[in-house]
Image 1: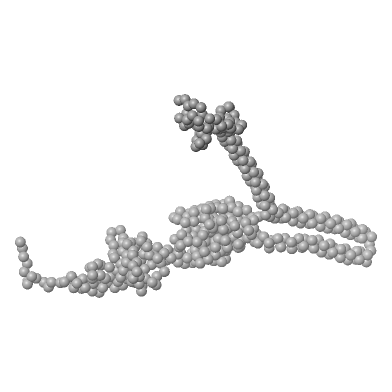
Image 2: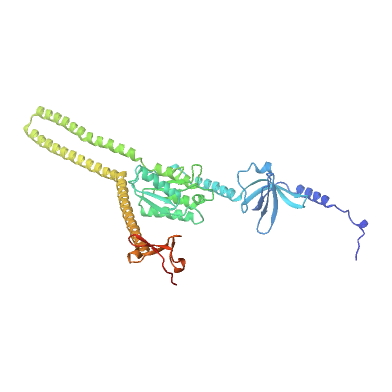
Length: 451
């Protein structure tokens, strides 16, 4: 066994002293720094302090963030979150644990995406993609409306609801696309290109519902921005909520705060449209009258001039021209009135088809059919129950003692104890028995008992 003479060795440290000097060494060697990694083993005791670990593919470090620092944060930490933490390197003397005292942290993904967003926004601004001179005007009354969005999301349902309420006569074409994920940006570009190639609609709504910055990121991709910029069809963006802004909003011809607001912006109100039609009808009626009055005044003036000039030949020629003008005027007036009435009937028929009367009649017919079916089912059920009751009555009649009495049998009862007589041993000579017949009963005395 080998022994060591400690009198000749270096100074001996206690554990507490070693840990304390190691902490001072670490804190003096590292100033405040940023560390990136994945959060794990997160715990938040009642003290309000946070304890967790930061790890990468090959190592991890314990972290502590005290209440005065973490209560200023808006994010909710959880295991698996990729974060960037700012803090000081230290050592917890009580356990000898190497740790990072965190003063501030943020979601690494959000921070990175935000920086990419600002960089792309600046680059596209300098390239002129946001210039107002390139913005196309939205049609006042679209003939066909295209929607580039997910066919199963809430956004498309909100848009269709608004379009049906405000401008149901305009056809709608949905160009389905992914709106989230790695493949979404290429899908959106393809849908915009297909809409431009087909030339079916004269305005496009580019939309999706709200979400986080990661969820909305496909609308911040550069290829989507260039596809919107190159579109020959005007595009209105309705991406996310009112507070959400994407690159697509800056490139689009018009930005709407929500998908529903986009549908509101590109459609006229049906009531306002009807009012405009009524005003146009009045103008169509007044226009030929005013023209007729003008022509009449002109005719009077020409007539006076002819009377003043008096040459018969010129008077005759101009009289023929006046007749032609009058016939043309009447024909134009009749044509104008006929066209106006046809247009009015067309719009009236379309509006009549949109009234709830048709829907009410259909529902009434369905209700009538349902009532008929219900009555038939009730009658069928009653017939089945009646048949079951009849069968049960038949069985009951078959098993009834009365049926036995009808066949000539009787039921004997011992009078003294009212017991049904089944055996001769139940009576003795002299006992009274009662015989129940089909009609009435008789009382007999037992004369003799035989076994």
